[in-house]
Length: 226
Image (cartoon, rainbow, N blue to C red; front, side):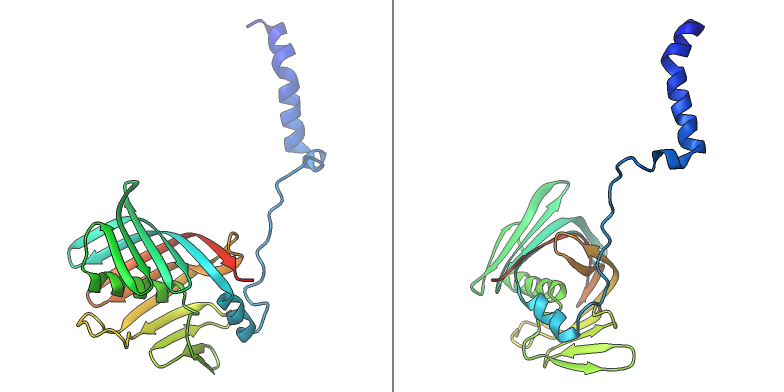
């Protein structure tokens, strides 16, 4: 390429680059993507916040899942949709649907990878309680210096002062299966999910009998009842 052609083609670009570096003020007028700041962690009282969560009529969680039982491990992605008392869980591996479990009108149906109805029911109840931590009937609230305890006869949820869950302990009183025992759920790494308009823990660890399940929440979508 001749020197004349280089000067014509590239010199204006070089000067623009130098100008941008040494004179940042010259480009301040250019349009930029405006970052929307999330709302503060706590901007309402606890009862008002719980009532807001109770008003959600339908919610869908998209997450990665890591299931471990002894030496057996399973990793994949999943979605769980909860509407009223009904729920649907879909689990994918390598992009393929491998299992689908539905709980509708109290009845369990499964497709794909087969698990017993007892285990499927327990899994669905555990995941629902784990994800909808605020879904506590006849709840009582106890305040301490550092923590908030929201509880009923079979469920305890420990919140921090920002109304975010830290730990949940569940016992299922209506299950007679030998699998029914206390479930421990730990929450961490809260982040703001814009599609749902709420802060929520991005990491959830579930311990059930000799099973360990790790959920990493990627997206939450909600619908509010009228």
